[in-house]
Amino acid sequence: MTGAASSGPCPGSGSPDFAYCGGQLHCEQVAIADLVERFGSPLYVYSAATMRDRVQRVRRAFGEQAHICYAVKANSNLSVLRLLHEQGCGFDLVSGGELERLHAAELPTNQVVFAGVGKQSWEVEAAVSAGLLFFNVESSCELPLLSAAGAAAQRPVAVALRLNPNVEANTHAYISTGKDENKFGVAIDRAKDVVAQIVADPWLQLVGYHAHLGSQLRTVDPYVQALDRVLEFVDGASERSDGVRYYDLGGGFGISYGEGAALDVAEVADALLPRLEQRSWRPVVEPGRFLVGDAGVLVTSVLGEKSQGRSEFLLVDAAMNDLMRPALYQAEHAIVPVVQRPNAALRTVDVVGPVCETGDFLGRARSLPRCDRGDLLAVLAAGAYGASMASNYNSRRRSAEVLVDGEQVRLVRRRESFAQLFQDEIDA
Ligand SMILES: Cc1ncc(COP(=O)(O)O)c(C=O)c1O
Image 1 (cartoon, protein in one colour):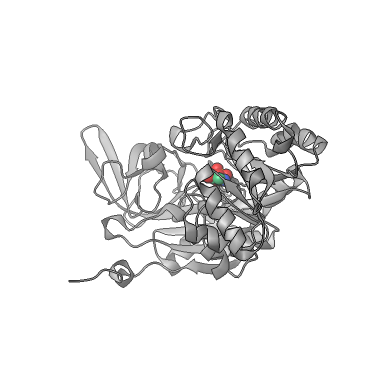
Image 2 (image 1 turned 60 degrees about the vertical axis):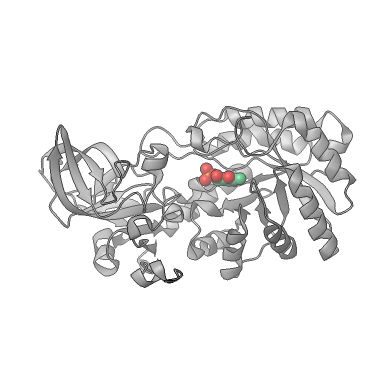
């Protein structure tokens, strides 16, 4: 039984800004059911307060001298980017398209770093003319492009070398990036030649090292091991440290997803900062998920129920095209009723969407109260890699997105129209 309609924290949410009040799930001061009434379902709902709080936590941990470069890929909505800029964040990019987003949001680009495992010429040229803080170089084949763009602009290009330290991040295989079987960065045993190439180029300046290890890390050890390996490499020859002033430890700060603790960012900072200070290296961090993951929920409406074999399915209107993480990474997101049903019996169900794929589920074997068509559920901690990974598969329109700030509500993305789905197709 679920008990009486109550007020208090929302179980499974990593943010106090999502809580029940009189049995109704709220985002800050706004009832989520009212948002669906206005904007329809499925709907992404974001809390501005949670995002601000997370930036402050990272700032408190790493100090004022750290550059916090929000990883745009986690949630690239222009309003989210603006909010994080107002909190003092720069940005971490992995594509020219993400740079276009910063231009569209009229945001400055001088606190921006640009990684990306394969950079195209136009991306390098656009980023050089935008005057970024530095590029994170991932392979030697980028260097001629960067050098040519610097020569054309008559301005040396600041680069950090992304090292692949071959460190186990203890995360899902698809989001591990710092092992030698991953495509990212330059293996330490090959980095010597890449440094020599940078140092010899009049249009390139080596300003730092980068070591993003993957996503959803929950322990400090991988960050410490990575720094150990980077320092060992750097101490091998003086040309590897001349002019270096940044250590970019990447992002990957894990959140709880309703199970276990989030990464303790203060612990990471305490372990790394003294060693960076010894060398007068400034920390750069690139959190994505940690800043926005717990700040969002995906709200979905129940379409019906059915039993099949030994399974009970709860059919909902959101699907893998809206939130790909369960299908792609076997990710678990807590799912809760938006309006509590006091005394409703609980049963175990698979929460599935309408997409024609067996992999289309939002959660399996979940304990939820019996639901009627039209009842609303919230998929928690969906603010990162939710809307930004959404697609039009099955010709479904991407969801609307709403940003709540106290009692203020702003629609920050309209639901797509069907006309938008085929506007670029040529009917020959
Ligand atoms: C280079 C780089 N930096 C930062 C991030 C952000 O990771 P997270 O959202 O886990 O903090 C990613 C994610 O893939 C990345 O590739």
